[in-house]
Length: 188
Image (cartoon, rainbow, N blue to C red; front, top):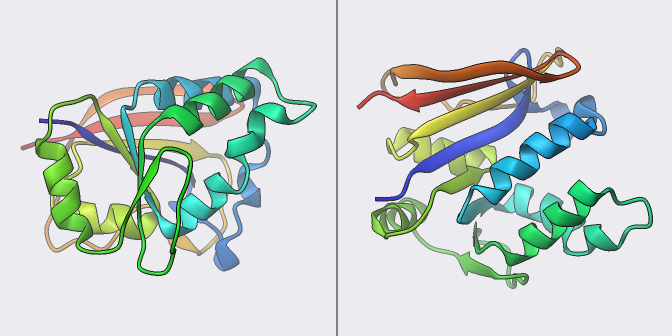
């Protein structure tokens, strides 16, 4: 059975975006933080996206390695992003590209099926999709990359849950410039 990991940047007060879907609070990542995210992406065999995160990622990374100021890590990230299989869950998108499959129906049923398959770890991104996976008890690991900023509202990292989810801390450390990473596994 595959592991499902939910990992995103968030503010100290728990938001992945400020009001108006503003993610400028995270600023451009330091080289250390960018390398850390690259390492996470390289370890994933399948990425699951909700519509908003897909639109953000697909607006830049297909050609991110062709930018004149791209660092070696950004070049590797762009190539890996294109090559890694992806599934986008959306009822409004009509077409996807770059090694991606579109699912317009039952997201929880499809994630459950994908988890039952053989293969390496999967990551899920996007608050709405991850929230549905949380409520269904499908997330095995949570990775919080917390930036030292408060935004006071917006899109929360954690969805409202019907019951508690107990976690075990697996790892915690500063990545760079006050950005903290904490990795938790779900206690089953």
